Image 1: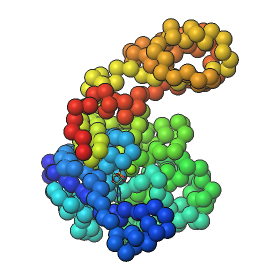
Image 2: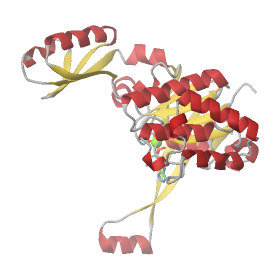
Image 3: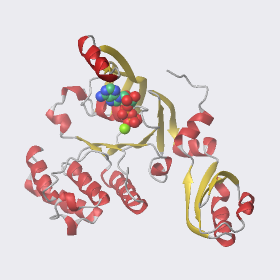
Length: 328
Ligand SMILES: Nc1ncnc2c1ncn2[C@@H]1O[C@H](COP(=O)(O)OP(=O)(O)O)[C@@H](O)[C@H]1O
Ligand SMILES: [Mg+2]
């Protein structure tokens, strides 16, 4: 098999009933519901080689989750062709389900009041994993994610980051060949985000799993995905090397800092282009290559409490670089 995933001309429409305002409106909607079509995916095509790790990036509402749900067989395509490991996902063939996993950052699959290990045991039964490989996989995952200490803690008592580690463990016990991760770092603090990213990177290399990961934030993909697909408004705007995207369209980085007082505040513009200044927050845009120098100048010459260097928002890249692309 030379392609793990094939998507050709995928269209996904949702039919929704439009709510009308007020009580009479609600009554009217009930009597004669007004239907509206939401065009979530407007014909997207791409293919993924086995073992590839691809970042799907785009603003909220772009169609990322819809794509992943369709690929995992939770949604039926309105039009177009989809194949994952040569299966039609929608058929939810048990052989297919044993080889994939979908993890959603905003959804909890673990039993809330029980320790995660109980969910793992349940998954062992559901996926019919032989005890020996279950133990081996579990031990490997515990080691990779450093979760030995918290296996027996009720899930509700875990931090968000710890919970995501457990979600990943639950999703990987059956060693899926294809892994769909929908915003796996959403809501996590920076340290936890980095741990999850490192894990995904290592897991991809170690097991050769095909991984499709979504995010609305470019920082999530740095040093992780070599290939990136930008989705916006149901279309694919870009599909290519992450490096190329960065060097062509993200020539600047943002320094976000918190000032402890207003001394020298008017000199801030010597550092770079001021995007926002409302004391104590300042956001300065600087060329990518000189960002570290600019940051250290800032730290040396201004009263800085806190500082981060970030990628520009994906919305801004889309606005600047792809403004001539089709809309609606
Ligand atoms: N079940 C649904 N019913 C109606 N509209 C939906 C449904 N799921 C998603 N949508 C709409 O489809 C579009 C794409 O959503 P989604 O795939 O969740 O975007 P993303 O994950 O990129 O934020 C949005 O306009 C969203 O409101
Ligand atoms: Mg989403």
